[in-house]
Amino acid sequence: MTEKPFIGLKIRGYVSITPDVNELVRKADMEKIDTVWHRFQYQQPQCGFGLTGVCCRHCNTGPCRVDPFGYGFQTGTCGATPDLIASRDLLDLVAHGVATRLQEALIMLKTAKAVAEGSTKAYGLKNPGRLKEITDILGIKAETDTELLAKLVELLETEINRITDEPLVTALKFVPEDVVEKWEKNDLLPRGLAREFFEANYRSNMGTDSDPISVVKQAIRLAIADGLLATFTTTIMDEILLGDKAPGKGKSGLGIIKPENVNIFIRVLPVFAGKIKMAAQDPELVEMAKKAGAKGIAVIIPSGNMIMQELPIITGLTEVMVVDHQCIYPYIVEIAKKYHTKIVIIDPVAKLPGAIHMPMTPENASEVAKEIVKLAIENYANRKKDKIYQPVHVSEFTTNPTLNGLRQAFGGSLKPIADAIKRGDVKGVVVLHHCTNPKVKHNYSHYNIAKKLIENDVLVFAMGCSMMAVALTGLAKPETLKQAGDGLKKLLAIYNLPPVIPLGPCPENTRELFVLYEIAKELGVPFTKAPFAASAPEWMNGKAMSAVLYYLAHGMLSHVGTVPQIAAAPGIEEFLTKEMEKITGGRLVIEPDPFEASEIILKHLEKKKI
Image 1 (cartoon, helix red, strand yellow):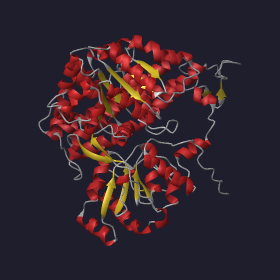
Image 2 (cartoon, rainbow, N blue to C red):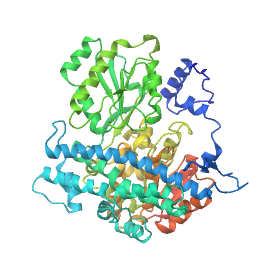
Image 3 (cartoon, one colour):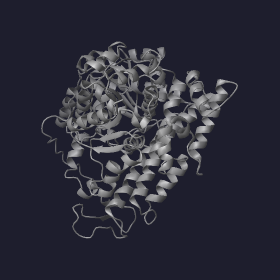
Image 4 (cartoon, rainbow, N blue to C red):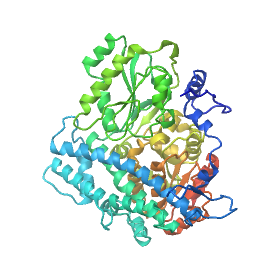
């Protein structure tokens, strides 16, 4: 097999608004390394049928395609219309995303069960208060905390595995009444996850459900089940097992990678990330690192967002990169071959050809973590000195609190936020969430939407890659409060909080829902009447689209910046952007321009003024 010729990056200007990203992409270009931006360039022009949602591969009669501009015969071979083709693809996309969220939930349940049974010493029940708060709402009683945890695990496993028609218990117990009523009235109330997954595959199959709106409704039901069961489980178990966190101080940016340290870069669930960090503090391993010539061991828990994952390798300073299943580019293995970095994958299910597979479980987490650290120390001497580049960009930010940590940060409850909204000091709350996407200049949309909103007295919470975007661009630190409007400044200055508050990684996205539920309750208004909105400026995958849909289902304006593949499906676009407002009060807004999107969000919040 002959090696393909290197083409080089032809993007005009910069790929990012973050300086070190541009420097490292230029370095990759000079070293003939294909980054995600190179590979995206090689895909241009992308398939117009796929981009607009009219390419169907649901059976072997196809692939079928329909002209997106309405010329020629307007169905596939079986008769599937553009709306049906796009609806099936949307449902499949959401199902893929929710499956990932479910895998994360199962890992957390396995960990919680091990704690309850006493079969692991690596983890413990660190937050009995949060456990009791959750189980009280669910009506679970027990003599001891471990029995309570065991019963909670049992209930959540039952809800996940149930295939009968009973509605989801967590949805009925946690979601505001006005939202549940709309779901019941419009056949959107989800059942057990197994049932919703089964029905998703059933409906999207060729020749089964041929009503596009029915298919899209199934995507919405599955998305709600994600937010109220899969992501819900990961969120609450993280808080119960790892404990409450107050807003703290952190650093983002590739400049935190220092040449004097053994560097371990990790992109894994917090429950395992913490174990690797603890292992790196082991005195024997620290001494081993010093004998290898290093000053210490640095465990770097993402210094940036998903699209930046290849860049720590290109610095030439990363000994080991540890990944699981969270948006991992398979190409990192190819890039690592050009440097000295070892790629380790710890997921027990997902595989990555060319990586070292070291499955991590609740039982072996501490031991595997030490093996990873040893591997990094041993690899320190293999650095290629001529390929080292020391990034300089570092941005301080406020690290994410848990729900109770956020309450404490506001003096014990979220009532001060509600009071500020009632006074008119704060116009509303917007959640920024999920991905980065090479279709957009890196961090550009996240930054500009957040900046415009805080200037207009909107409180912004951020999750996942969006959280890292605002961290990298300086919006998630208290010093940036001077950029906020006077009303928002008045609220947050008292508590020394930033104008954009991080709330955690995307597997814990339900924390944003908990926060919104609580603010709406303090406002004393139905949830669907509250001045809330959501934005996924650079959404990329099914996990993000699931969140887009469950915000929509909650009656919120749900904005996306990168265009979903429904442009040639007018019925689906009409349903999501207009008809859903009659059903739940929410609507989808598709707007790539961050400034236009900000204006739409601000007008929406003005309409919802308390």
